[in-house]
Each structure stands twice: as structure tokens, then as C-alpha cells.
Length: 116
Image 1 (tube, rainbow, N blue to C red):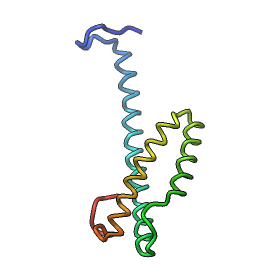
Image 2: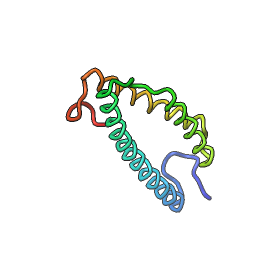
Image 3: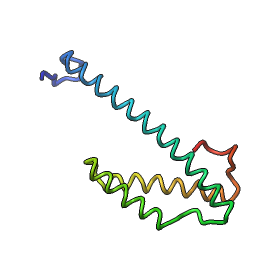
């Protein structure tokens, strides 16, 4: 492969084409991730409304621990760093709990609030 030591764009056209192909794949994957997260949050919003209607707590530590263990295992099988997968899930769980708290407080209902 031929590369340039300058940033002037002196890169082999084949390298540029391969970069463009890979970046297009990355963009498609990013779009899929965003859409999957949107679907996940639609489901968790329904969970939040169900919990609020039955006075259940916004957080479920036992469920969270099961999900973390499950996701770590999935990550290992997919050859993804399990620690990274756990950090990502913890971030998502924290956001879900925040949404559930807002639903329980009545600051979010099915028709208003952030799109989840």
C-alpha cells in the first residue's frame, strides 16, 4: 500500500476508495445503532409507565446485574471488550432509570417529553 506522509491528499486512489467503503459501512452501522437504541428506549418507556402505574421502583438492581452479566458474555462471544460493553450498558441503564423516575414523578407522559 502506498500512503503519503503529508496531509495534502496525496493518497493512492485505491486507499481512498477503501477508506470510503469502510467509512460508509461505519456510517450504516452507526445509523443502525441509533435506530436500535430508539427502539430500546420505546420499550423501556413502556416499562417505566407500567412500573409507575403499579408503584414499582424505577430501578431494578437484580435485573440490571443479570443484564450486565448477559451483555458481558455476549461481548466476549463477539470478541468485543466486555468492560466496554458493561460501561455502555451502565450508561444506558442510568438513562433508563432517569426516564423512569421522571415518568413516576409525572414529569413525562406517553405523549410528551423526550423521544425515547
